[in-house]
Length: 355
Image (cartoon, rainbow, N blue to C red; front, side):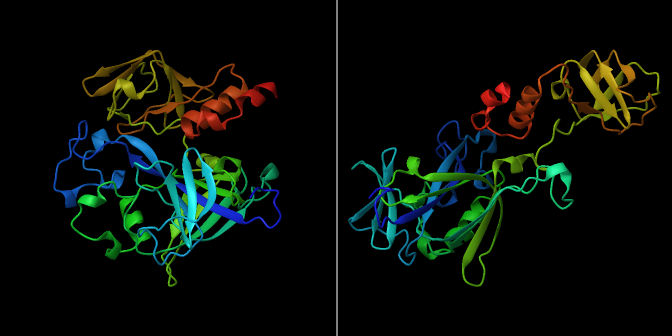
């Protein structure tokens, strides 16, 4: 059945790209060690060797269906819903699975616990007329409801076969998932909408960034809220530059030409640049590690329209971000990619340059 076939069936799939460690527990370079029941779940919250955590992602897929027997062994699939990249999305009665098209691998399934998907479009805040909205306006958002349910831990626990307990009888899917994934900011959430028989790549896809969740509620539902990718730029989520660590080690006067800062090292600051201490900006020509931290030398005091002043021990020496004779689109690209964490693949830099 294609998108042009009369009576076509609508298919809606949600993908959550869960942060996941690509290493194997106890195998070098992972130095963790312990019994089978004490192994991690390859998530940062459960990691026992965080110095070697190798960040990757694992996609979890959700669709509407019967969750009563979710996660238990499936019989022969009787209907192809979609296929993409070597995967087959199959439905056997009310149960849906995502299976690799290979006989030597275990099936990877779509969890049929999706209840509803509700979206709101972006609303631009022209001239900042709406005081209750951010400078970027109200970002596009999505609210996704899932039914909570027992689960066998297939797909989400790489060591499930070695555990001594039956995970299907231990807590529920979302209760376990939230406990194992406490660090959820910036998780990518995708919503696919298409028709039975249509490849995922041909479906309409909307991409969002995880924002919050609620539940499980009295009805056993969990609701995930996500926003479009520019939500990463909103206040408190992106800082340019990032907060500096250095603190003035000893009081300085308005005429001092160098300043030593503790709680930091030279690698925390660029070789030359601008500092702000209190209400004063000052430039420096060099910095080097010193007895109490890092010393900035060759200071020019009271720059950028500020006034040289004395400063006290403990005042923060904040690095300033300066752009000189750079194109607006280059500045925007730097801010979004290097400070907001937005992938360069999602930035239309070619058309920006043309504009």
